[in-house]
Length: 446
View 1 (tube, rainbow, N blue to C red):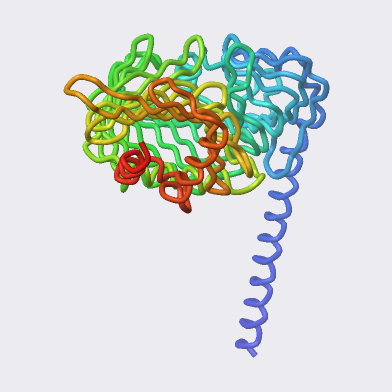
View 2: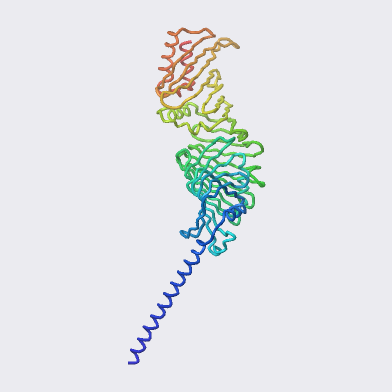
């Protein structure tokens, strides 16, 4: 009997513990819900929001709506026309902003305590002239900021330089370093960008565009803004490896650089300028350079179809200058490419110029070629050819042909053109850089 009473007492005790636990959990759940629901009763003013953003060096304009949301975490959702970071260094247009509130202080409606800003949508504009201000903002910022589904646009003189779409952008401060990361779409390809600013002034930038085979790592020392005193760049683009030291004042100066791939092995130097416009000027002194193979790859990539693949080329303005056993200059200007003063051959007696205005199927490359034929110790005869090349058809068209300024007739030009196609061009216009074939052709017919 006593044993049965003890068992009954144990059951009652167990039920009481269960009831107490259940009531405690229900009370805790109700309290928690009431606690997080109370801010719905608050009237958050535009003034409070504006002052809060100003404390983070952010100006917010034309607030149209403020709403408190509990899930997925307590936050204020704000609709506004413009968000401007620190005296206009960065402008976000037509975005939706979530202020992720600090859970411990959500009842203090007179002062917003928040852990993070989440900005969804909008257009994220940065003026290249204010990059050093943006660098300083990231360096000193103490609030985690995330941008989702936004478009990042770099501008110069109110003109778009490039755009990265559908971004996830994070500005993330920690104890010893601040980070900026960008994941988005560039030229229809995924791009990953990472900037790390360390308290010891030794900073790092990394960039990856896997589909374009572009990977870059930059380490540099910084003295308070983005006016970099010195650094080292490692860059891989389409299986081309670059390494160079650089310094920066008004321009970025390149020193002690080299490039290596299966086409070229060369030292390089030069400069890159961003003011007033983006411009580069790079000098190469190649030890190995297969211009014929390079032109063949270029021909097959940019001329086989009607699809315009020249978007990246159109972003480049400046020149590449070659000097050593191989000499010439390649100029990029407003989407056009000019090959100037190219000297082909060990004897340096074949001169080549060309201009590319358009890319794609049936597009033409305008060219001129001069061959100097020595007939005395110090005298030369000159053979001049001008016309255009059609890469897709491996076809050459002579428009003019002269020998020592004596012009050939239309019938004669056509005859020499056919022989040039059959003996030099063959299946690729890249063969116009074949010194052996060129010399054999000129020796045979002139």
